[in-house]
Length: 534
Image: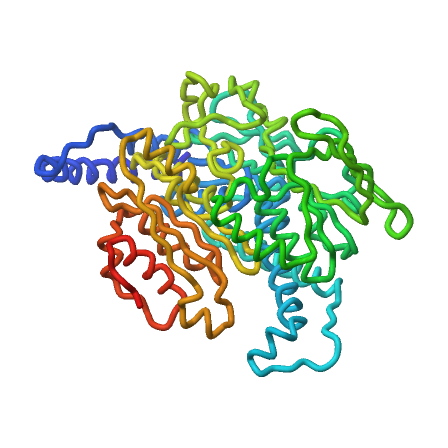
């Protein structure tokens, strides 16, 4: 009690200093542009939890990249913080997603390079004998990397004084409460951030045994390298694994329900990607069909059976027998059993409705704000990317401490780590055309080519392009799409431009290092204003 009283006396002293500072700032603010909105939270409401009303200022349910980002920023604001990890520190990204998949892509990419004798000969390099790999060693590299990153992530939380609760956190139905599902112990906090992440979606009719029929979770284990593997879905995950499998010697068949392969990508980029990533490799595909029934096999004895039906007529069109089948049909929120319904929160296909400040709403249409409850990452469905979840977590903390913030999702980049890579920020050209027509502005387009880039040619990687979409009326960059060597690194400059509202006129006058790959973008920026880069 003495400690609590001392803490409260300290807070009173701080409040007096804050009052004086606020008075001075208010006077200064009279000469600044008026704010159109009011803060979400006052300093005094935050101080209440420090007087012992709650166990923590912030409880975060979930410890993936989003929960981790929220926790780090929470501690940076001097908020007492607890994270319910569900025995899964690092979440999907670190343990079963972004991190280990990059390790598999790196290892298999080396195998592809070293087996490409024609490509090596252009460098004057000759490799004698057969290039071999150890499957277990490749898988071990991915596992080791995941464990290392997980350890670093957990260490950073502990070092900053974040309390880690091993159990899964669930809402009790009472405000400010989270229960440890394992122990039954209830913890309280002024604010609760939901960051449960997602799990692979398995369509009806598909039986997964994680041996011959598996999701990305099983694929990352790399328990085998099948001679012929079918991949259901041709999005980011499916494309990346087709890159891994073909590099290691597999043949791949894509099964895509929509009319086009790679349906979520910009169409111009997708057509070039089809030539570079599919046609030149042992890959074929079926489009406009559902894998209506997938039956596991027995390795070396019985094939996996895949029955396909027409996406429109639902009539049977073909049956495939393959060595393995990977199901890459997207992900769904891991929100089941979290106590959302008991807290008056309705979900839609598991997704939690939030406003632009990440505050949870009671429902998706005309929902009301649930006080002191926030939701970030895959569970809200706004943008199912790890770095988007982290940005949302930081944004939620900003709003908790009273600094209003909303994430600009149009400025968040994404990448597909194939060889070559694909990266993008903002809408596709098709979406941008619709947006321009709806909002009444003129869309501009300019491109740059890797074939004209000295660094790309030095690497013998001249295939690829960068496409800049911009508002002709204002000059502001709307979107950028890149396919080519190191596209995932090049996209950041473009993301920053979108976020800052930089114009193509300004970008065209910025100096890019020569010779570097970023000159591909320089060519596109200059082309937008009628300048030449060569």
